[in-house]
Image (cartoon, rainbow, N blue to C red; front, side, top):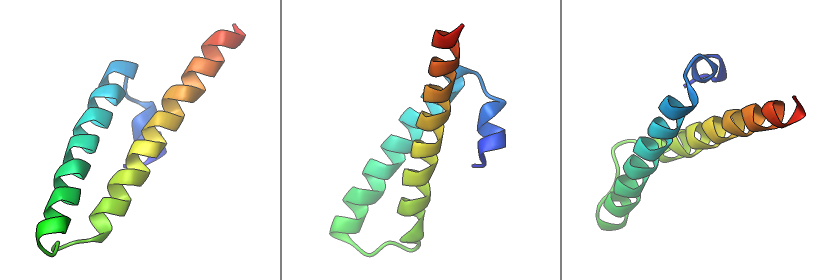
Length: 67
């Protein structure tokens, strides 16, 4: 997911997507411990997406505190 797409979402939508991505990441980690993944790069993509979403939420928090 691109940063521009994330910025169009509301805070609650971003938080919901973070939860969903973290749950999927947990399932992938568990599956990778028991068997080989079809697409191991998906874990990296999910971690980066979560970080990107958290960064955008933090940017919004900082903008609100400046006002």
